[in-house]
Image (spheres, each protein chain N blue to C red):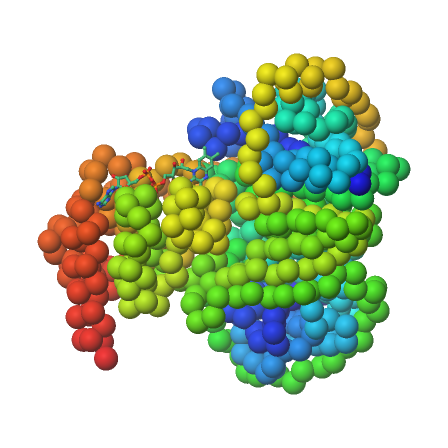
Length: 246
Length: 320
Ligand SMILES: Cc1cc2nc3c(=O)[nH]c(=O)nc-3n(C[C@H](O)[C@H](O)[C@H](O)COP(=O)(O)OP(=O)(O)OC[C@H]3O[C@@H](n4cnc5c(N)ncnc54)[C@H](O)[C@@H]3O)c2cc1C
Ligand SMILES: Nc1ncnc2c1ncn2[C@@H]1O[C@H](COP(=O)(O)O)[C@@H](O)[C@H]1O
């Protein structure tokens, strides 16, 4: 099985969010970046596990500038065999998906894994676009992925439950919690990662049509109102009369 | 020109999210000065009722769509958009919409924004807002292609009845062969699915062990709320994984979120900070969650929650 795992870079959740240039651009100063957790903990690790049990290879792909190489090396340290970086800024979901699809088209992957969403722009758009561009089936929000020959059985999260589906390779799947357990790269992995191939390729031409015109911080919360722990009748009244939620 | 909404009907039943999407679609259509068309795929009981929520027309594409395959559904939606001259397609940002939005956008060469929380503003472009950075900021997107795909955030536009029931028109669409076989659908019977819940009672490690969740369930049952939990609680198996909210779990925005014995770590807040009203019960007055709360109670959950249950019972009895 040839696995392709799409990895993206995102600010660490604890990052303080700020904007510059009249709130039109995200302030990248002092931002600590990480590999998107869904890509790292679930998609990548599950691909590794399936390769370990059934054979094959795991390639990681990222669309981004050279400064993303640190994240790509981390994916190699966790155990991916090789990496491809498509050298461009990830301007919008369609742009990113088009780059990955163009690369994948020539490389006959059996399974393309992505995270369910990036934790910065929370799009959940890229994986389904890749699937459409490659005319492949797509299963989103998968919490387990089992392979038997060319057939995969996938459980996916739906509102209030789970759906279990079967699909043949090739397909695209986006990973949610449950699919695998986080792996911490060890020293040997980190050393080996330095020697693994990281190919840089140039992007294909794509017109983008979605852009962020401005940012704002959410309206400040009014101060918390403390309620006497002995007086829960008061809380109920506040929820009913003031907040009007019950 | 028109606006097309995909109204989902898993198991043949229209869901609350479908009424929300149609309500939102009506607002989009009004902003553009055009009509709203609703589409159901596969079996959909009583779909004409979508007219009440603002659809001028209700379409049904029935054949080959009885179980969910994003390729087939996206084909049906894109063709229905073309047949009805729609240049804006609205979906729900849930398990269906997240599989479909990108696909439909590629088919229609459309600009795509998912998880939208505002009605488009149309002076000088087509702009919508959504939460980014796990709720820590709001971004305004400019959609520049002539076709647009929007998926609307659940629990943001409550269903509003503005019109009357209409007749359902069957349409025919060309579908690719289904390549996904749905083998099983397991939903928890009788309880409210967490992502759709308007009221949520959630608890964390402060509750000490799974045997103490009785009071959480009792409180939730009393007010018709869904139950949720913090990540460590799901990780150690005190509660099922689908109840885990936060950055790595489910993101929710209920009207009321009651957090019991949860410290309020940033990764937890990332999934719940868009809730309209937040109540925090914690014995530590310094717990970070109080900064994000609307109402705070400093106290031991084992005293406070039973008292809250009693007060809630009295209140409920008074309402009947
Ligand atoms: C990358 C990453 C992602 C993460 N994603 C998530 C996520 O999605 N969701 C999530 O929840 N967490 C997530 N976490 C974990 C998060 O950082 C916190 O560790 C977690 O939320 C803490 O859970 P808790 O509040 O239940 O437990 P604790 O932090 O242990 O807090 C327990 C609280 O209960 C209070 N308490 C104790 N006893 C009582 C009592 N008798 N009565 C009342 N109050 C009491 C204490 O004062 C304390 O505030 C993530 C962490 C990382 C690093
Ligand atoms: N720039 C990128 N390079 C590679 N993969 C990406 C990139 N952006 C997004 N992805 C993949 O698509 C998933 C969903 O991203 P999004 O649609 O942006 O929420 C991520 O979890 C990644 O697996």
